[in-house]
Amino acid sequence: MFNTLARFSRTATPSTKRFKLYTAATPNGHQASVMLEELKALYGPEMEYEVEKLDLFGQDRQPQKESWFLAMNPNGRIPALTDRSRRDFHVFETAAILLYLAQHYDIGNRLSFNPNTARNEYSQMLQWIFFAHASIAPMQGQAYHFRSSAPEQIPYAIARYQDEVERVYGVLDSHLADRDWLAGVGHGRYSLADIKAFPWVRRHPGIGIDTLDKWPNVKAWLARAEARPAAKAGLEVPN
Image 1 (tube, rainbow, N blue to C red):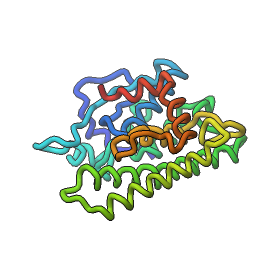
Image 2 (image 1 turned 60 degrees about the horizontal axis):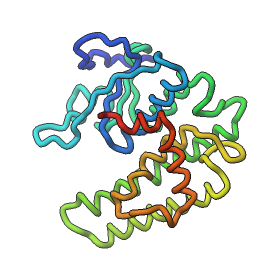
Image 3 (image 1 turned 60 degrees about the vertical axis):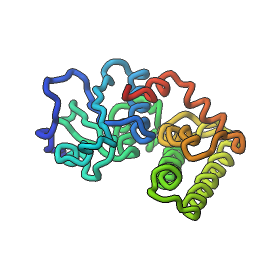
Image 4 (image 1 turned 90 degrees about the vertical axis):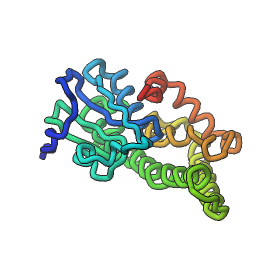
């Protein structure tokens, strides 16, 4: 069933671009923009998208909490995606956005795996997507909050989340010991799993981890991901 909330769109004039991305320069926002840039590089201008930058920390208002945005994303978080080619269908949650875009637009399974003909690889990709969604992102987010944003310094909370981030990086490092990417046979293949994970890991200096030297396989994986032209473009959104 198509979403019936198109009336909340704030676009003043019709756009020829297929998608509209509501986002900010955060790890979650960058997952969506990297995915869109990767699709654009693979499939051309049909994957063009419009960006609306949301100021998440404005003193006067928080647009992601306003009714027009909550109609698209009841959770009130960025990013959110509107697919104009499917009657303004709205998608929220980063993992759901990545999977939606792959299902409808990665027709060659260049960024994903065919769930019918590559079932094991597809399952492996989902496992690492969910690992990133449930472990990397929340642990690193809490580590940043208690280190930099909490109204008071709580040593236990800072140490607890810092230690958990380091444990998670250790999981990644072990998995990447003999492979280039998180999912796929052999050395793996760049996929949604990597797009979901690397925008968080690249923000490690913000939680006091100045270098990834302790996790050399993670360090090399992150460098490979950041070197991709489409990834570089996506990390500049919004400019």
